[in-house]
Amino acid sequence: MAIRLGRRSFLAGAAAAALPLPAIAQSAPVRIGLLTVKTGPLAEGGIQMEQGIVAFLKDKNYTLAGRKVDFISADTGGSPAGAKTKAQELIERDHVDFILGPLAAFELLAITDYVAQNKTPMMSLAGADDMTQRKPNPYFVRASATSSQAMHPMGHYAATEMHLKRVITLDEDFAFGYEQIGGFQQVFEDNGGRVVKKLWPPLVTADYTPYLAQIQNVDGVCQGFAGSNPLKFMKQYADFGLKLPVCGGETAGDDALLPHFGPEAIGMINACPYTIDLDNDANRKFKALMKKEYGVVAGFYAAGLYINGQVVEEALKELHGDTSNKEKTIAALRAVKLADTPRGPLHFDHLGNVVGNIYIRRVEKMQNGQLTNMTVKTYDNVSQFWTYDEKKYLSQPAYSRDFPPLKS
Image (cartoon, rainbow, N blue to C red):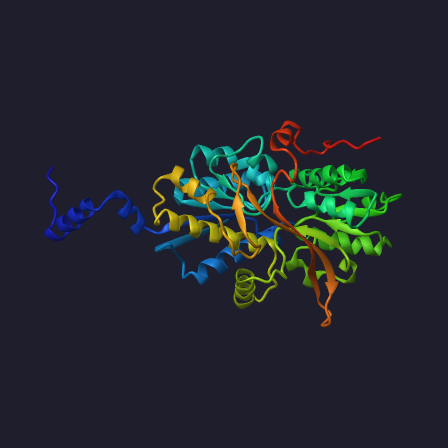
């Protein structure tokens, strides 16, 4: 059967045939998919993630490097199965060029092999250490931090400047918690401290009393709770009558949580790749956009996704908007160096993980009665390997529930 083409159709087809393939690809929107979580104890962070990337894209009029952006947000439900289902939809149905997210380490670990098999560039806030260490994904870039990356300097600061000697740690009973506490413990003990007990409440814990009752014979506490759990823990910590110094990681004293804390949080020390009081152009713009679009205080989760947007845009500029070659796309992402982001300067190591500043902050009460984080020390250009030799670091076991072990 013959197929007839009208003159207009023929000319349109001829014109398209005359264009090089990259030109055709660049005329289509670049498709960015977000894997986040909007229900359960991690929803507080997941919603902020979406706000951060949407604020960035709206400011850019949904156009990056000359290409319009189609943005698709998918709710994983905070489970490995949900993350896998939504990743499949983004790749097979929506044909995304980039995946941002997911939030939790257990979600990321559930999809890494599938994403790599489909050669889809992915940037995640999840800290799962081995994604850029012992089991690297060649299509993965992380602009936030590994689970242990902020806790390494926290361990150093706790030992050398808080002068803590004996500490009990508490964190959620899953990969992010193990890796946070492992990073803290190794550096803390290398600098003369001692972790005497490690407690692992389940992610969904309403009552921390059984764990609080075990905080004895120490001079400090390190906690790494995430989502809305830091609010519950610190409130119950104070109600239990405990007054020991508390330190924590990037999620323990997130800036966006501070309006919901009470006086129990004052004095808490936390380490984070982002700090609200960083005085640079990018952070001022980011905070203003978050206030304008959502009327909220900016925090680590939102900043992380805003920065992901910056990295994607910079890579697209280098690629002249052409994402047709996935190997070139991931190479361009990993080659990005930015001097001005809400977290300060950053670049990536040869495994795709960020090298950037980690800020030690203290929660303080302002004159208006509101709480804020005040930066008390900046550790510059922190690697995922801290100050350790990379080969030696990778030869030791991954941080886990039992590594490093407690010393007798």
